[in-house]
Length: 174
Image (cartoon, rainbow, N blue to C red; front, side, top):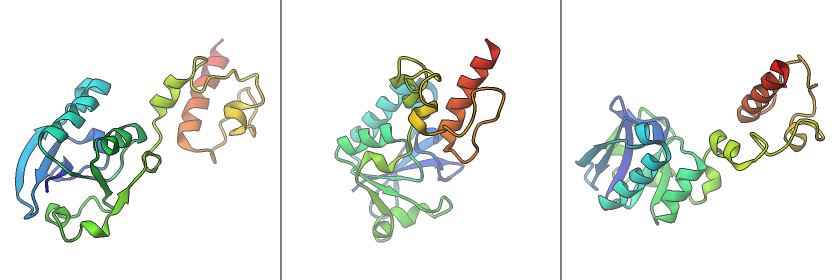
């Protein structure tokens, strides 16, 4: 079995698609291949190339620290077993075989992180397909703030804060 591990500074990368490179290890933890991350420079096309490279190298398992829902979905659709590594400073040999059972398996794309870019692309009216004149931002997610000079509700998830901040700055500029 070949296991793919995203690498940054010779440790497992914190985010799968932002890794400098990827290594492929066998059951004995020997590196059988290494390649640069095409997703760093080619965006969406690079992520498609990345999945193709993983499959072309005969990998069956992938280790991640953090991964977006869209890319996780692509890996799972390729019948790859995806596992969450809890610690980025773990030795690579740890993931070769016997300790893999201690890693949480990712079985559904919802276990990945939501992509703010993907969310923004979905709507025709901006970040989430609505106007701020509707019943509050984000269908009620951040009704607690006014649409004037006030700051965003800091208790909201980061992707909503960024989205609202952008929309609010545009509203204030006009």
